Image (tube, rainbow, N blue to C red):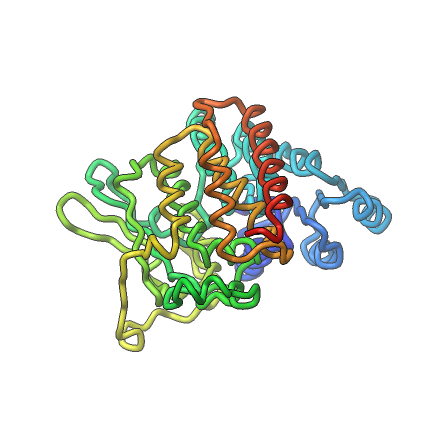
Length: 386
């Protein structure tokens, strides 16, 4: 059966790799809808190649250009455009590969339309994990993880009753062997020089602070309904073991492979089948020879500990953590603050915040807006001081 797919974020890292997977499995998929941010040149090329029925872009100006270029297609823009794609009845799976909070509303909309979700958007579960997973259960929808770590756990977790621990691996980022003094002086190009993965700027900065790993812990808690005490983080520089599951009898089942996002993307799109798709290099145990594992350094990377704290606190604490961190990361990328200030600003906002338990969807967005404004104000007031 041909699966009909819609991709939110088709011009980003995950979206373009998903289309490469589809190229390798072209008889298995039909692209129904694509959405993009500001990359009108690439979305135009994708439209020519995949001939989607629906297209959405971020800005009205790009919408007008595409509407004139493709008058027979359904074209949308803005947040409303993402919701219209989520409303399309004639799709089997929605790949949510946009970054930021814009992924939440269309995910919820698609769930209510009983569409399975391939999820590559962290904010959806960090902001509203309890709500999203409850709705998925209510509407009988599968949330299929695309992140390599969560995909690994998803593939290894075959007996929840016998689960002891989830083990999430981390490469350690570019500063694993750096001193605090070196991190104090880190420049943007050093922060963006990830040793294993080629990703967007925001997630690469989060990987350097290990906040990304903290957000993955929060996601894992919601995806797999596992207590935070039973989620462990292990630094594994080689990034061959993508994550693992430990069972009560002492057995550990791990998912191993070369660092490649094509594999988890493909598994999410073809689930429950495994098929031959993109030709990837096979993992060679002999060539690998040495696998290293370390405990995270929470003094150098306090963002990871703060993520655990926010997750255990619950409610909108994780939303606060995410929003404050994201605004601080943007400020760093704009050259407004130092790398180490990202955590200081996030912690300051987090410590002053009162969490809301069981928030409504509207409260989630209202709180997110409030926290982002507070963070921006703090950054503006502290520029030149920190």
